[in-house]
Length: 310
Image: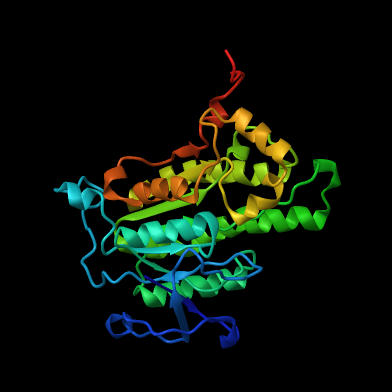
């Protein structure tokens, strides 16, 4: 499996060039592509929120034109073969796991290096995706996001704006831009990465929680507004997942024990715990599910007061 990044003004020295055994079977597009093996040890050091491009070897398959009706076979219901997808924030953590999951189920997942907090770059990204997929997009995963941890009264206006622009304004605008492509595909699915902070209060996460609460409401509204166009809208809401974003805060052993004490399953989540659900929400098997925000939290959001010791 290979990861491909379309470099938009980035120096080629930033990437490791290797031979691509699939290159002869891939349709050529305008732009410069750098390829390197996708392995657990591969790292992409980008300071901005980004989306990535992966290409599945399963190409040129007919899209499922069932208009979200149940498929005839079990294999079809649990497959994404021939589907096209865009995943933002797909170079690491949950986003990377989602890309690998979708590709593993047969989807073609595309994108470009992009700072999603900047409107012009979002527009350029959708133009690129539209060109790659001939104006059709089946799946939009709004995953890119960030967090600033501090008490509410200590937030500056700039910090507030940055969080709002990256976490909510970007997904709202991405949905607007992607709507014509999703509609044109005949069968569309939007999945947002929300958080349990959109349901319950978490320490020093007031603004981040507000952005996720807004995403939850947008999920519900789009489920109703876009249903006539055969586009479903759902969200996943993780608790602590083992990703680079939370490494620092979880390095505090006492804090980690507090996290375990609030989590009935007594462990942190893995990115694949989230990506498997995201993939399911994009499959024909979930064709009657829309407007839902599903927690991936080991039971944390259900835990009022349940001591570990009887």
